Image (tube, rainbow, N blue to C red; front, top):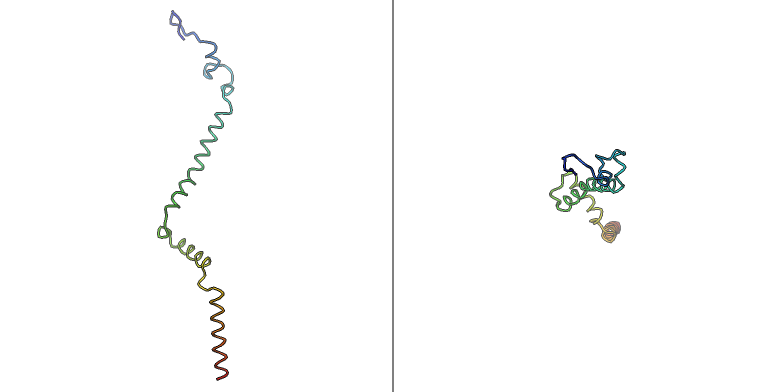
Length: 106
């Protein structure tokens, strides 16, 4: 604030709230809100890379994968959906057993 003689006159209440004019410790006017806001910015920055990765991954197809990862997917698919079921294995074993038995008898 400036008086009639163009001298700077400070308003006490404004000076107390201004960390640049106040002679107290500058951080005395700061509270935990600024720390919380900084934490939120940091958390967002930390999470952003993972969020981008999730979006990239959700848009990729099998053909976008490198050959080594395609092989891992193929192995996982084979394990999850085996070509041989217990019934098919039993059927094949029984057919072999009957064939061997017929050869021994014949």
